[in-house]
Image (cartoon, rainbow, N blue to C red; front, side):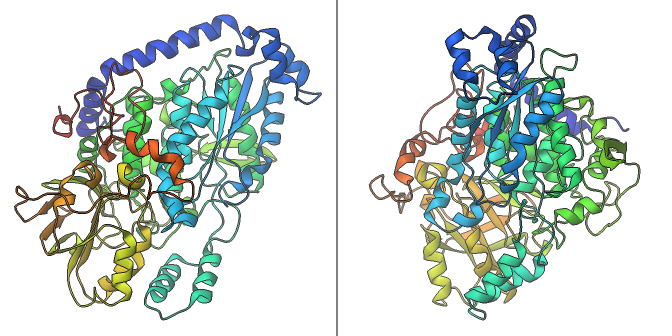
Length: 636
């Protein structure tokens, strides 16, 4: 194994130094709670009789005496199950399976609570999408409510998609003395090839096929229980959680309702019992998630060209562990982390093909061997990331792990560090006189990485769609500026619905790009885009000063985003919707989140850095940044 890459080491040390005060406070608290847990035994033993009686009143005849007693550790199951979403439908049977596995391992498990799980695929382009990012923090709070009963010594987290996993982890980190085992459900089997699906979407945008043809294509792509198979936010979640050591090794991309999936679920339940404070392998989540594991997650995201949403979620997750991560850290890492995978939208393969090419074990092993991951970390599988070189299988009905020593079996999908698809990561950070932004470059052709063209300004994505349908965007180069789409304006919706029409124009030979303070999601495709622009228009960001026809230069290769105009004498144009206008689909219930949400570069969160003495407050100031923190200071 090579020594740690010097840039990886420098970034990790910089994150640790910047986070020293808040991380120290956080660790002191969870270690104090962990020491008390070791001393006192299972948590429920210290509840009053009335409290405890409420806690086991509805338990099964088998579990009630275990819960009444105070010898066996209690395990909380926090679930995102619903039967509308394919990724979460398999969780229907997990509580029973996990309770049995925990009981066999010497513990007792209860479903402590449920968390909401909305689907960005269903809400794309609709009002419900404006609640999506806020749902992450609602999920964190829901997780905290589930664990607030103080009945538990470990947690089993059932979640897969978009905001659900980050929300569960943020909530778990506020109970950082408890071990947390994340239990995946796995991807659906491969359906309609991604190239065919994308082409059908573009044909529909051009009016060349109808709704029935499009619906047929979509339903052949999303066809069964399990996670959608393209490499978006949900599957990026899964990759990062495994690299952070919060999944059992190799459990990420095993399909639902298989014998191996069932065995891994049972093993996760047993492992939760084994790593409580009352055993010899105590692994509290607040210690598993440290500066090194956060950097490991960043490396995995960059190496796989994962979802841009995680430039928000990783900052928020780090903050929940008392760690201050910045976009500049990601920018530095991106310079030395090569792009090693090609999964749709970065290529034509899906996550099943990635798994079959060698998957997580080959990826992690190669990154470790080349000094691009920290190996000396605590995981739920034990000390050291080397545990994650091993893949699970069933042998004579028993679950075993064996180290994977071979490399990729398909170099079109997964490559070694020595032979990457590109020398740097799939996500670049941008800076310039419009602020700072994120650009996913892994799916963009090299000739499209730089564009200089006049701005076409829209204050709503529907305005752009109407302009496309009317032919007003035909035959011209332009940069579409879509503003008032940030967390303080309307919840920072994904604007993925814009990809098919703009891809049509790109295929016609026009040079087009997107600049927005909104999101484009893990499904960001071949259209060059500068997204998550911070500060946002609603908080007085320079994007509100851009005028129709201003030249904008987007250089994703060099990390620059500039408007080539003098903005000094201008006043903002346009505005976000007022609270009175921002109604329907429950949006009015979230108006407080609009006022409290931090800058995108600070995680777009309503929470502060855990352990920080005085986190900043107010719209756009960044709850996830310590007092006095500014973007210009992030490299220090």
